[in-house]
Image 1 (cartoon, helix red, strand yellow):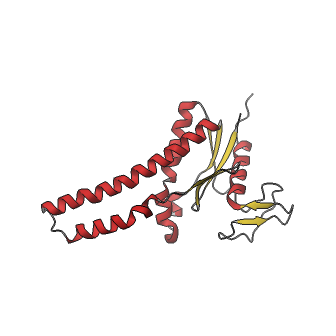
Image 2 (image 1 turned 90 degrees about the horizontal axis):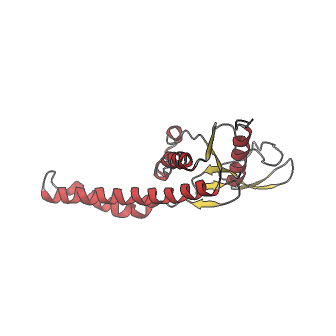
Image 3 (image 1 turned 30 degrees about the horizontal axis):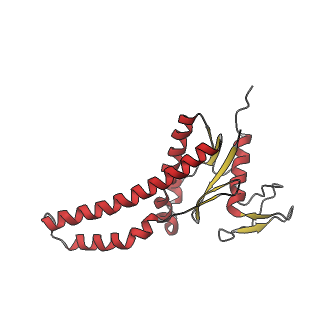
Length: 192
């Protein structure tokens, strides 16, 4: 059976332990200008007028467009993963805590990690596949997936690093995904 670890990120939406990256398509950003203009127009209209009501519908339609683009993208990725792998290991992300970081809040909310996880869960159930959710402090981009040495100096901006223990060069996100897979397999209940 095939197992994959998935690291969810901001630069790339999802990174698999076998190195496949799904880019982060910022649907909100591409529609943001239109949305800003539409909302500004709405704020100038008189509340309750027919112009206000029409503009309110325009704003709602832009929000709906963003939502359905994102959902479609998440469906494509989750379907691909469930079709391709028997066991999917993901990190239990505390999205509510992460959103407290104001610099990343919009990016995180806009990505729909929570929605993605629930898609993975119900699709896996339908297909008879496994989902392993591991604690969010267990794996880390800082732990070498080859020798287990921890790189305490690793900064968020470091996209690649070399392990001082075994000299292996790591892509930060792929390394994290490999660690997630390793933890997921370790925590899997043994079949008798």
